[in-house]
Length: 485
Image (cartoon, rainbow, N blue to C red; front, top):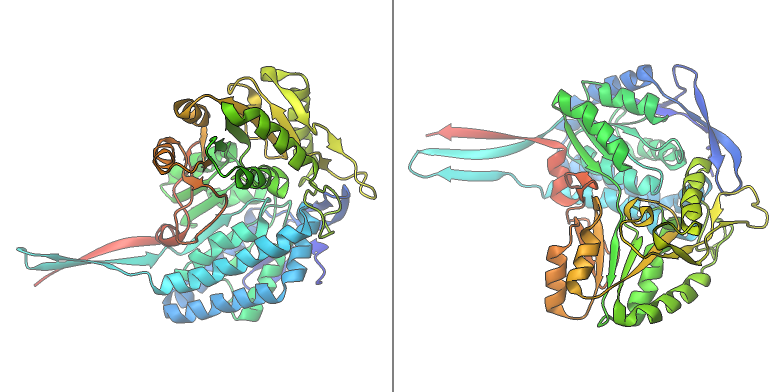
């Protein structure tokens, strides 16, 4: 494994230290100790990255689409060839189980490049024959130039590549800022891109805190568009800075997702999947089903079975393939999640802790940021436990009486990212899927992603859509050409 103890910026195809000389500690969350350092970039670093991107733009944007696709596929090859190294880096950075990184997240990063390498070559223009006016209209979509991609800590390489791959495929040059909490795989991606023959300056990776590197990106007026994934409050700030400058932005934000379980569901499949839905990646996925709403007639049975299944989850050393629950990403986030545990133990909203409810201690990792998988029964949907995004291994249970009651509970939050519906009645599935306020609705499954489909949320869960042609459209500017004859 390459040395990632010191994570520097990647600008113009070269690794470089932050111009300010400022660094951040990089913490191993499973052990609670400093495991390296990461650049804390500022305005001078962002300026250098934008300049490098602009210098590369003319050459990259004019390359035939097939040539750009070839380079993106080589990057995918590089990710796949370094699967173990990248998975180990994510395990160290984020405290997540190594099996998840190795079997889901790193392979998906490679898939993002392969998909957009192919999708860009199939992206067609629109043509309109203006009959009666002796004219034709056709629309071309041109790359924007230098664009910014700001990605979160929970799925580091997965979500970074989800943004940079379509941006690069359409001929843009990118200034990418991964989370300062999980920078290692982005650092390694620069090396992979060089080995794949990506021209210098097409992808520039700058590290650092949101207040320094992130703010400098938002305020840089030569950056044509900003794609951001993260928390809803930060998303509001992104919009407040970028929107007045009349620049494009896309926001994929938080969720408080309902998991609706009707009595006529495939019970065992719903039960098994709901445990995974609740606690995957320690609950640190914006799509986790953190509010489980269960039809009254099966509520007590499901509750007991769900508790039993949750108690069987293996919490421990993230580096072991048998581990299912690892550490939370950082001490501040650990403390935030623990505040919600205290809230639950205090009985807020009629809360009753059914399972877990406390920090966990793992042998050999006594200073790590571990939390027991926690199930809380609540009496009202208006409690903080059901209204606020916790982003940890905490799930609430609540019964509903009928279909309309289930829909009302599902929609009675400020978020609208995703929902899951468990029922074998086709008419009910159609009604509920239409009625639930969510950008994505899964029926009798969860997190089954087709990269061609639009992804994003309603209400406080975001603005715009990513995925498929939506990403290709976001990273281009349409131009209509009208020709009279």
